[in-house]
Length: 357
Image (cartoon, rainbow, N blue to C red; front, side):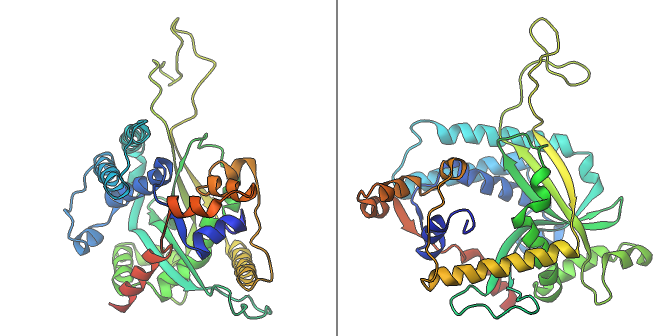
């Protein structure tokens, strides 16, 4: 967010304000993640959280979570879904996850989930030869990766990352430069080895002990650090299945039985992206540079400037407030009426507790 628009970053992470009523689109991806986390959760994780050993379908879980979220929003914000936006998103989510399970039923046999959603925090690395971070710069990197996976065919370890999108999920040329997952690639393996809760480390290594020693050597470095091969991206396109009939090849048909020229993009797509040590070092350098610039903005040495953009602004939760600010109108009254304070790092404070206990 800081790289896209410092003004937006200032609202969200410095002033720590957010809209009182989040849009369904913003909550949608979070609830999809939560449903899949419970679906793929390992037996050890289920025992620790005192959950039934056999999970519900992710569609059923999403439905329950979504209804609870809607009721909470209506109760706390005195708000109603008058235009049906939330109801529409609920239907899409249930359909997506029902199709997801069916689509990947056989492919999931290839992947063993060693751990699900993990929140971590780790010191920002100062690259060799670089000056220390400025006084006001952030010093800790935080994140949440979705899964730790073992490919039982190749016997390689991967980080797993869920993505929901409105676009064609097969258009993935950008993934090699995906900065969020790249940062997880840079920091998560070290955290898993050095700082992760002992129960998590034991859970992963217990599952790896079932692998023959000759193969297990490929998964661990000389000092015992997990050796990851890359990132498995798991895309889900937001939308309902196309109701048109299909032929034996899966192509959608016109009413006259001919193959339609307008074929929808697939609803689901998985893609593996391989990363290496050079990727890691470049990400570490950029994270360090970003932290330095955030420190300079906090110190008043750089402006928290706007970066207007047709694609970014239309998705910004602060757009109306920013527009009022731009025109010189009373944007502060709008801010006070429509936003609330939040702690963007609250989940990572809980992760600290896990280390202590």
